[in-house]
Image (cartoon, rainbow, N blue to C red; front, side, top):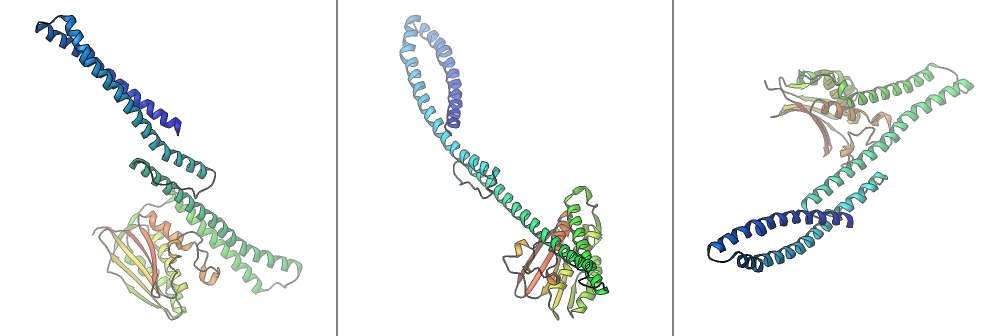
Length: 355
C-alpha cells in the first residue's frame, strides 16, 4: 500500500512540476521581457526594471511554488492512501478466492469508483460460490442417480449368477426397469449438454403455441385420467411465437408430466396461454401440497428435488425442469415458478410474433 501511495504521489508531483515549469517559462521569461520593455518605455533603466521584477514577481512566484508543492504532495499522499487501502483489501480477497476461499468479500469504502469495484468483486465471488455449490450438488446427485440402478443391477446379477434367485420374467422386468432408468438419465444429460453448446441449437421458427399446447395436453391426458385429474384448458384461438416446435413440445411435456406427478388423485390442472405486449405466456397450475418457499429458487437447478426422500415415483431424477429452463432460455424466453395457497404454478414465456 505504501508503494502504491508513493507512486501516486510521485506522479502527482511530476504533473505539478510540469505545470510549474510551464508557468515559470511564461512568468520568468515572457512576462519579464514584457515588463522590462514597458519599464524602459516609461523612462526606467533595464537594470532597474529587472531588479523591480525580481524583488516582486520572482519572490512571490518562488514562495507560491513552494507552498503549492507542499500542499500538492500532502494531497497526493492522502489520495494515494485513500485509493490504496480498498485496492489492497480487494487484492487480498482475490488471493483468498484463488486459494479456494469463495466466501471472501470486501467492504465498500473509498471513492465511488472503488465502491463500484468492490461491488463487482463481491458479485463475482457470490457467482463463483453459487456455481461451486451447484457443481458439488451436481456431482453428488449424479453419483447417487447412477449408483442406485447400478447397485440394483449388480445385486440382481450376482444373485442370478450364484443361484440365490431363480431366473424369472419378473426378475428380468426389474432388470429392464433399472436399465431404462439409466437410459433416461443418459438421454437427459445428453439434452443438457447439447443445450450448453450454442452450435447445436436449432434455428428458431414461427410456430403456433396454442396448437403445441393442445397437442401436448392430448398426449398427457391418459396420465391425468389415470389419477382422475380434471384438466382445464384456457387458450386463445392462435398465438404465434418464435421458437422450435420440438423443443416447445419437450418443455410442455416435461411440465405436464411434472403436474401429473405432483397433483393428488382427484385434483385439478389448469393450462393457460395468453398474449402479452412482448411475449406469450404459458402457465400450468396444479392443486396439491405445494413447494416450500425456500425450495422455489432452486427447482430449475440440475438434480434438485423437493422430494428429499428421493422417491422415484414422485421425485424423478431432478433433470426435467433444468431441461425446461435451458430449452426456453435458448429461444429467448424465461421460466419461473410460484406456489401458495395449495396451488403450484410453473410458467414460461416465448418471444411473440406480431400478427
